[in-house]
Image (cartoon, rainbow, N blue to C red; front, side):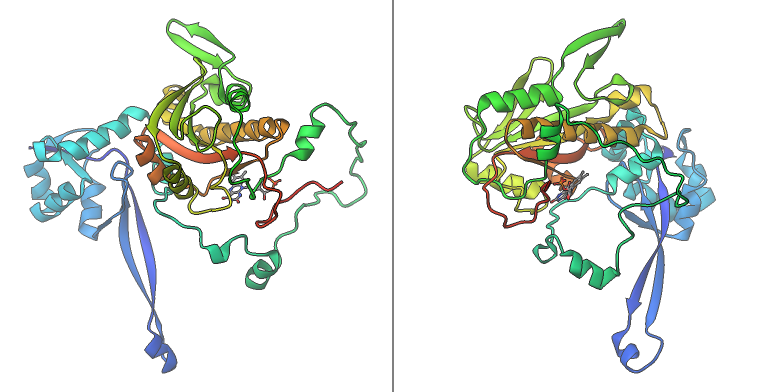
Length: 382
Ligand SMILES: Cc1cc2nc3c(=O)[nH]c(=O)nc-3n(C[C@H](O)[C@H](O)[C@H](O)COP(=O)(O)O)c2cc1C
């Protein structure tokens, strides 16, 4: 049997503090620390605990070349090799290793930068619920807990040499820019007109033209910038109340400007999914139209292979899209939101996505405001 190491692996010496309350009350040394090796292998998607002998084997077995299992066993011990194979940190050509080997192959095929793959796979949530008691902790509470925050600005020259700039003239974009805010009080029954939803999707995420840069190498022109012109961000729509569109999940096809139905749902099901997607932030759940931004990593990593900046570029791309979405929604008289506090794993399941290929980044949404101020919002006050 041949074996090799998984493609990407980081091993963290993690420390857990144990408080012995009885000893504490008895006035004795009460805090103990346990340190163990935590293996972070993105193709597994979950952490594994390893011991020092296993760390040593992992540090010595090639991730590229296949080696005889017996040779590795004689070097590191049969038990160590067996356990690492079982955990999927080592992979073999045997049928029982096929499923984990396939996950490792998927990871290899995408050209991830190792650190980025680990960061992505181990920063995803499932079934996370933001604690309602922590809902927008007031600044008073934050100051009580953490002291005053670092100031909102920094001065780099305080010697009278800064150059005072003229006040900007009013211009066309101003109305929209000044009206934009993050809405947290949506009208629970309002419907987004189809024409509005359509304009929003087309202008924020749609293609305004295609160009063949080299044989069979196409780029799209969109109204937001994208690293390398690759536009890797896919858009999925959770329609709760969009005129003429049955409640459910859709993929937005940016060239055909069409919604591809993925799952039709009852209104109660979209409500449940919306809430789960935004980690229980119930102030966002009633938005009639939610949009999930998902990076198709192979599109970006095709050019930016194993690239130190590629992961950042994907996040930045999504940020540009969300601001364009905000502005278009605002222009249409509907406030919007974006949140990064999302249950990526639940969203992947709902959309049938593989996190090694498709990176859920954020959820946006929009809809008419209720007019209430039950949850805090920041409006521009001239
Ligand atoms: C990347 C990102 C993540 C955000 N995540 C959340 C969030 O989880 N929950 C929330 O209520 N607002 C979220 N917001 C909205 C911000 O809280 C909001 O932009 C900020 O308070 C300023 O208010 P404004 O957008 O009304 O100007 C997020 C905004 C950004 C850009």
